[in-house]
Image (cartoon, rainbow, N blue to C red; front, side, top):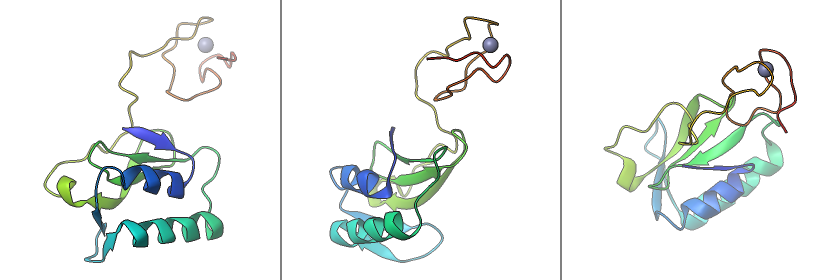
Length: 120
Ligand SMILES: [Zn+2]
């Protein structure tokens, strides 16, 4: 799973993985061109905030992660239709721990949420 800061970047990557998507909870289907146009419009009119990012599954499905954890899948790639997509975001790496207090660090966090130490 990869993460992106704009829907257009996510869509561009997704088009290298799949050729057809359906919008979640509807029968609307998108091909590559339609997806990219829609993504550009969405980025321009409704940009996501700093804490949010888009994720693209290995099969090319696109989701929105608003709290660095839960994923709302938006566009399901045809080849992912019968798969259970993960509903939480994970970088797949081993967990990191705060060097000040030992608290496990939320992936992508800049500060420890236990003691507030800067993690960079
Ligand atoms: Zn800490």
